[in-house]
Amino acid sequence: MHIARINSAGKVLLAIVLLGLLAFALGFLPNRWQQICIMWAIWSTVGMSWLVILRVGEFSVGQAGFLCIGGYSAAVLMLKFNCPFWLALIVSAATCAFVALVVGVIILRLKGLYFLVISLVFAEIVRLTIAASDYLGASEGLFGIPIPNNLWFIKFSTKQGWLYLFIFILALAGFTFRRMEKSRIGRIYSYIGASPDLAQSFGIYYMKYRVQAFVISAFFTGLVGAAMGVYLGAVGPEGYTFYYSLIAQIVAILGGVGSIVLGPLLGSALYTVFDEYLVYVPGARSLIMGGLLLTVIFFLPEGLVSVRRKFLNKFPRGFPRKFI
Image 1 (tube, helix red, strand yellow):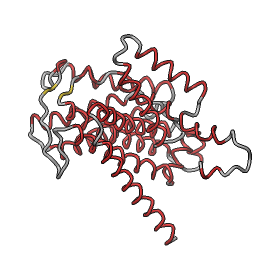
Image 2: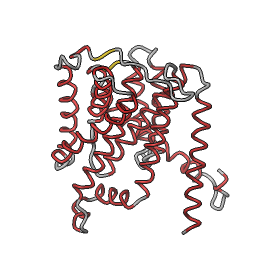
Image 3: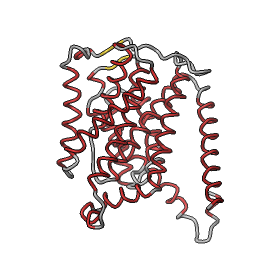
Image 4: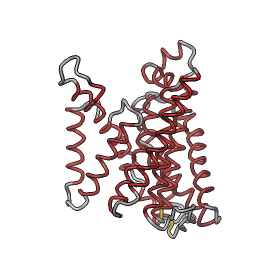
């Protein structure tokens, strides 16, 4: 047991070192590629958060709602109450978690198509309510969100500083979700996702864990939404449409829903690179992204994470696979 703890601590330490080296290296990329890496980190985190809800058997299309709440909460706190950035970040994420707790107790009693529709309605209610509020800038949104103060050598007046922050949030989310998946809670989530009635027959109160997953998902989605709003310097209701919820599903499906961390990382990498360059091809963005998604679904139904296994299966039995 003592050895296992040492090995586990060693893996965490190694992951932290490798992540630090990765962030340091990415910080020297040209501004355009730093922007791509920032969007990769954002959508990877949102994709992981969406998969947490999927693990308990619910297909949500309401991630845009929590991105919106997080972004507007940070904007209001910093613009109207002169709240420090770091406090606004935590309060915004906690606000999303609280809203998810209140809403989740009600809507998570629904299943399948009913939950899908009501989650979409929730996101639209949030967006349209904000668009009708003069205090929140109505349809024009809120502008001029102040740039956070520097944190040691990290300067938020540059993309490099924001890249470090978003990679830190991604690492925090990835570590949390990975530990959850390997723990008792992760196993309970998979039981509920497979058959909630059967899980309940074994004494698992599935509503408790569904709400728990919904709250955790909302917290990290709101955290990203708050940081993204401050990074862009403005928030507006037109920036949180259904398409933002759809991106979370696209990156998870492209990468593979079977892996809560690696799947969104791979899917987001593919999505953000394609999205960056398809902007310059008028009318082709939706067509090519749709074609890419269909190609992955038909030929790699388990996502990009299955490529390595398919590659290894081409080698004869007994091949030393551990070196590949």
